[in-house]
Image 1 (tube, rainbow, N blue to C red):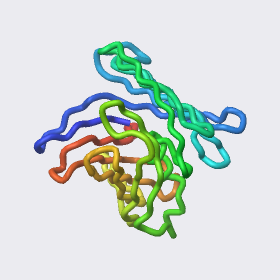
Image 2 (cartoon, one colour):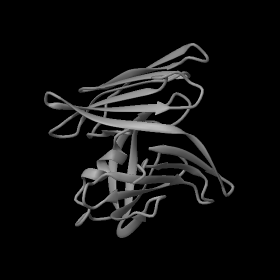
Image 3 (cartoon, helix red, strand yellow):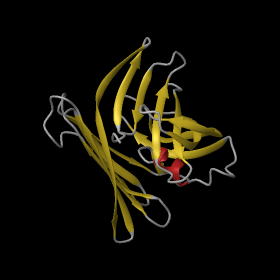
Image 4 (cartoon, helix red, strand yellow):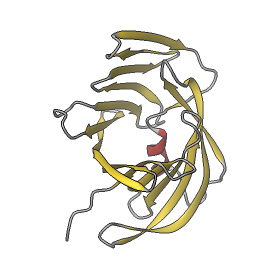
Length: 208
């Protein structure tokens, strides 16, 4: 997917993100490869292992030029955050009262929901950790699901579900996910503040 930053009415291309779902026995590995101009290959890799039956998180590992993160989900949630710029590693352990999804997964989760009959608003428990930000048990909220049409940059039209959500990790930015009704692929995701500034991910369409 193409990654674009919107700010003050202007757009700037940041890079490309590749996603891969890999079945590994009874689990799924979701691999995210972020490709940024000027950086060597595999500079930013995110790997999330989840149960294929329950979608419960098992392990989340992420590495880039600035930091490494490891989160392991068991009876307790434990791991570390390594700030490579400061050379400071912050370990953590949490005991939670209720199940959560990994914060890196909940936008993928939207693809799997019964969107035809899904009741909104709905609340999703998620976990995230940033030493200088939000951490621990947090919330995501699906505020609406609407039927619509997505038009690709080349003019191709697709029937989609437009799913609006936000979480308590950020500052209330809303994410609009355009999910194909026929394939359940995410064709576009916009995470924008009230002024329309933020990040846009959009599927790379091959020319016909």
